[in-house]
Image (cartoon, rainbow, N blue to C red; front, side, top):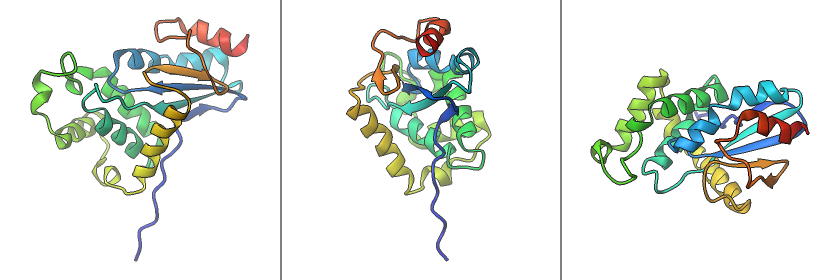
Length: 185
């Protein structure tokens, strides 16, 4: 008997006509700061006025970036979908030092393996990710996120797009009210 194909749940919140896309690398401190504004952005702009889409922007100088991005997208394939992905993003951000290298090149994570990183995420989130992590369908989703970022000229995180246009003057340090004004003004 063949197993049904798994599908990643799109990382979209809200259902409004304006689209705010956040390109995030999960261990980047600036991406974590931007991601932590998601709920305030939806509340301020109105879930009926904006759709926020999270795009994973894996970056090679964040050494476990690929493994963690795969965990996030794998989590979205489990029952609970995108809310599981949010759990992973939240916990990785809350415990960044356990998933990142000091100065991107040294420290205790030099001895960590991908399996240890996956187990840490599972412990923090209570999710069993291993089977979904190994899902062949996940490859397509990961490549889509990467390709979509490149096609839109996204090179660093966080980067923001509104209605398909990069907003080079918006940053993670901006108050969420600045983002809301851009979306509703």
